[in-house]
Image (cartoon, rainbow, N blue to C red; front, side, top):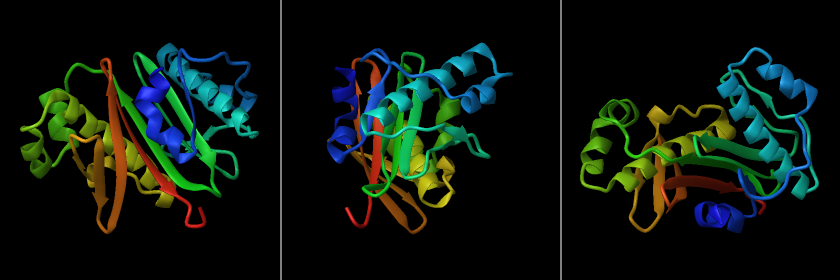
Length: 208
C-alpha cells in the first residue's frame, strides 16, 4: 500500500492519513468549500476537491468533520481542534489530520517528478544547500524539495510564517532530515516508493 510505504511515520505518530486510490469514500464537499473553487480552472478544482475529500475521509475516521476553508495565503483552515496537511502531485493526493491536543502541527509533501530542473533548484535552495545536494542522488534532491515544503507547512501551522525559502534542510540517506529556520529546528522523515517521494514533519503536543 502506498499509504504505508510513503507515510508510515505519519501513521505511527497518530495521524490519520488518506491517499488517492485507496479506500472508498462516502463524503462530499461542504457548500462553503465548493464556493471557493466556483471560478477555478478544471485542474485546480480537481486538486482542491480530491485533497479535501481525502481530508474529510480521514477526519471522519477520528470522529470529526467540518468545512476546510482557505486562508489568506491559500493554506487550509482546519476545523477547531484539528491540525492537518494536504499535498498533491499528478499521480497522488494525500491528506493527514490529527487532534490538536495530541499534535501541534503536521506537514506533508509528495512529488513524482523525474528530476528537479536547475531553475527550480536555484529558486528553492540556497547556495550552501545546492553545494551539498550536488553530491547526492536525484531521489535525495527531490526528498530535500519535499522536506522544505513539509517543514514550511508545519512552521506555518505553528506561527503563521512558513516561507520555504527561509528554511534550510539537510536530508540524510537513512530517511530522516532536519529543517532549520532561524532558532527553530524540526526533525522529519522522507520515503520513496516506486517513482514517488514523500516527506513529513510532525510536532507533538507538549502534553502528549
